[in-house]
Amino acid sequence: MKLIFLRHGIAEDKKNSDTDIDDSIRELKKGGRSETKLMVKAFKDMFKEVDVVYTSPMARAAQTAEVI
Image 1: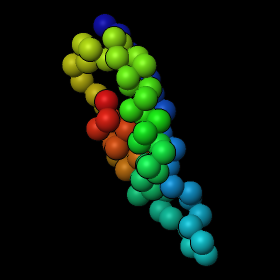
Image 2: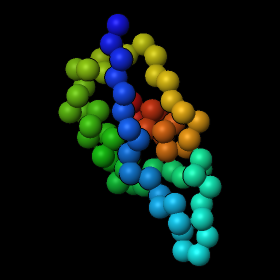
Image 3: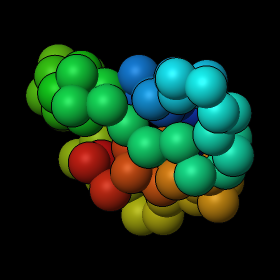
Image 4: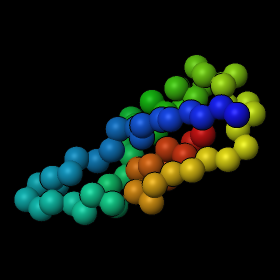
């Protein structure tokens, strides 16, 4: 069994202008999604035999898992 731990891609800033964004709903920025796609492409052999992906309920973590 192999375990692979990944950190989510670049997410929206926690502070958006004058208000704080709920941390659980911060999404990936366009650059964060692109960066994740590049990482998966670079390590594609490692991801070939993935059976299961577990993620936290945070929006940015789930979006990163979707790319994988």
